[in-house]
Image (cartoon, rainbow, N blue to C red; front, side, top):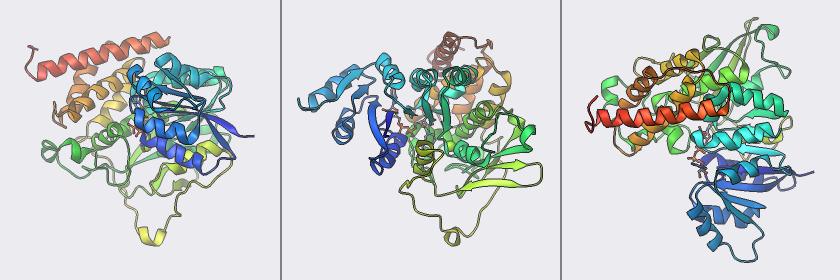
Length: 397
Ligand code: NAD
Ligand code: MG
C-alpha cells in the first residue's frame, strides 16, 4: 500500500529533500498535501509534478497567485491560512506528516499531526522546544509515531536500543554525544565576530540549509535548540548530553554506554539520509545519497564547544533548566533576533545579548495548555522588539 504524505514546508530545504526521496519511490509514497508560506511559483511546479489533493499557502494572496497559475484541469484544491495547514496535517487519509515549516509557525500543524496519531517526521525542532511537554503528551495521547529528522537526533535514534523507553539506566546509557559542526565561525574570537555579515553567517561549511537555521548554526543556538530537543525526545536533562564539536560533520551523533561502548551513526552531510530513514522506518530505502568514502575523509576531529564566545548554547541550557515557558521565550526571542540580524538591524554579537535580556525579564509560568505557550511566545516577541528599539536608541531603557 502506498503511504499518503503531507509535506509541511514543501518549498524549503527539508521539503525539497523530502520530495527528492519521495520522487525516487513512487510505488511507496503518494503526496496528499503540500504547504508553503509565500512562494507560489515554486509551489505551482511542485503541484504539477506531484498532483497532491491539496496545496496550502499560509498567505492568502500567495494562494490566489498559485490558483491563477494552475490550469483549470488541475485536480488540486488550493487553500490558505493556519486552519488549512492544520487540516491537511490531521486529515484522516494521511499516514505521514513531514513537519518542515521553519520556526514557531510550525507548532500548530505539527501538534495537530501528533494529536491525530500520525507518523510525524519532525524536522521543525522549534515546535518541540516551545511546547516540549505538551508535544510529547500529544504524541502519547494520539498514539503517534515520532521520528526525529534532525540529523543528530536521527543518529541518536539509530544508536539507541530499538526498545528504548525513556530510561537511560534501564539500558545502560551513560551519555548522548551531540555533535556540532561549529558553524562558519568556529575558532573565531568574540572580537572577530563583531563585524560578520549575514552572507558570511549563512554560508555553512558542510550543510546547505534555510537561512534561519544557518544563522542558528553560526551562533550555536541551533545546538542549544537541539540540546533541548534531545532532552524532550529522549527524556533526559542537559547534563546527560555532551556537545562535541566535530567539524567534518561525518559522525551525526553518538550514544555512550556504561560498558565503554560508543555507538555512532556516520554518513554524508545530506538530509536525505535521515529523511529516508524516517519515511521508510523500520525499513531502509535508497535516498540518492552517495556512500561515505572513509579514505577520502581520512580524519575526524573533536573539540569541546566554546560557550564563552558563543553564549547561545548556555542560554538554551538555562532555558531548559528554568522550564515551563522559558524555552518558548528563548525560541521566540531568537527568531526576532535572527530576523533583525538578517535585515542588518543588529550585529551578530547582539543576538545572544538580546535573547538574554528577554529571558531575564521573563516570569516563568508552568505550561498546562497550548494557550500558555502561545502567550509566552507573543510576550517574548513583544519584549524582544521593545529591546531592539531600546538598543537602536528609538526609546529610552
Ligand atoms: P527553509 O527556510 O528552507 O524552509 C521553510 C519552509 O517553511 C518553507 O517551505 C516555507 O514556505 C515554510 N514557511 C515559512 N514560514 C512559514 C509560515 N509562517 N507559515 C507556513 N509555512 C511557512 O527551512 P529549512 O532549512 O527547510 O528548515 C525547516 C525546519 O527544519 C526548521 O525547523 C529547521 O530547524 C529544521 N531543520 C532543517 C535542517 C536543514 O538541513 N535544512 C536540518 C535539521 C532541521
Ligand atoms: Mg541538526
